[in-house]
Image (cartoon, rainbow, N blue to C red; front, side):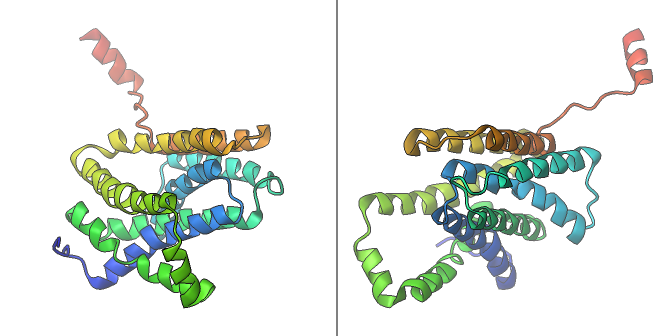
Length: 249
């Protein structure tokens, strides 16, 4: 068994409850309440916006002008998406998706405060937290008999999906992501997160036949643009004076 990282139990439980349990449980409930999967893959990425807001509140990190512009653009896109409620999107599903992104953002802030630890060990130990609230909810909603029935009658697709989400999409993916962030500049790594909405949207359209109307598509593009403004490594413009001096050399 991997050794527990030098992190207190209180921090492990808090991070596991927000970064993993809260994020995924709320996301799954959102999909069960009518949130289209392709749209879900975009909405959860708004965690980048909430992380900036929470960092400003909790850590007194003042957002840059570019971050502020990105947050405003993305929130404008969320307003357009809300206007499509009543089609294949419910207000409850949208709210649960926002709760998922907010939980992820809180987890990011908590994760930032624990210092330098081995990411694989940390992710494995954090993964011990989500089964507790998940099983508790299952018992409360379905009862012991219902939970036993669901487990004994789970399809092969459900088993494969569970293993993929638990092992590949959580433990391996988060460990790789954390290691990349430690070895390379954040500006080099974080833009790859923008691939998630594209892959999710295309896969949902291909597998489930999901379609995006003009208003929702415009909102999704604004959200994606806002996130891109925040995470992409935009080049800094050199002062005119320094440019002239460089040219004359």
